[in-house]
Length: 158
Image (cartoon, rainbow, N blue to C red; front, side, top):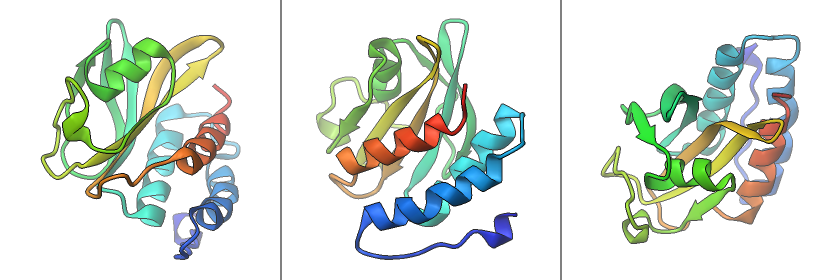
């Protein structure tokens, strides 16, 4: 199905997300394996938006552990409250960072990363992981990304 992914390049993020979301839904429909679905979501987002890095960290015991992703080599484990991912996990809320150099305790997995968005993945009321996206550009992510990335996460029905 990946060969059927239609990537549109417009100025409007909303149009790009609106085109991509039904395609992601089709990719993961009927697939019960979480790893496979997270991998396809990461690939689709990377293909559409060309971000530096996009992927998932999953809660395992007392750490976030690297899951499926697209991009350069990443940090393997992140403690609760550490960096943007650990803080989003701890606070159970989305964090948008316009300039990672100004985020206290930012973990620099890649020196090329300049901005970031991290959204928690919930199973009921429990955070079971995070979706993390990094850009080589400052101020790349905003409320539009938050809204549509949440819609994508909700497709997983965790």
